[in-house]
Length: 173
Image (cartoon, rainbow, N blue to C red; front, side, top):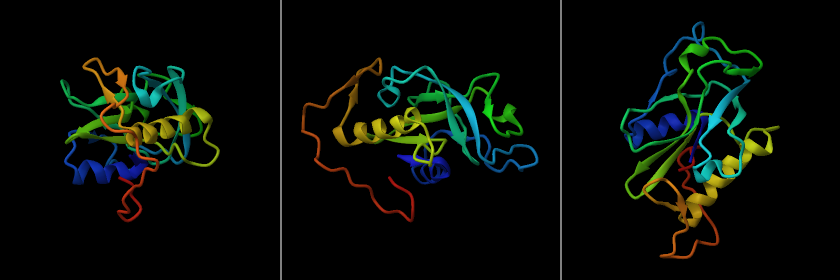
């Protein structure tokens, strides 16, 4: 799992096929200093299980991804084509309209889960932190998916009682 700007590390070092569309854009053109923005969730995904289809997320210099057509990547959360800003200040919403805010990218036999938000940030609602918790559970418990992306519990090995992350200088992988 990679949260907010740490996802850029994953894209670069794991050679993921997504592109951060706001990387390098001057803040006079795109600026999100700490705003609530709307996203649409694909609730078929285990990370969005039990959540409503539309929620607001915290955006603070957060990435937004372009996902290639015919990719195996799964977009869990996407910015709407209009009414992106829920509350706060957002300059240049045209950069993120229709782009991905939360993506699962296959890597080897696993997944890189890219959060273009800070789901663990203070005062985040249960809805957003729930995505974070479900992603962690999915990773630890070995959740698999069928061809139509339906979550299936891994029956080959029982889940580990603890899930540890590697320390990569502040980036959890």
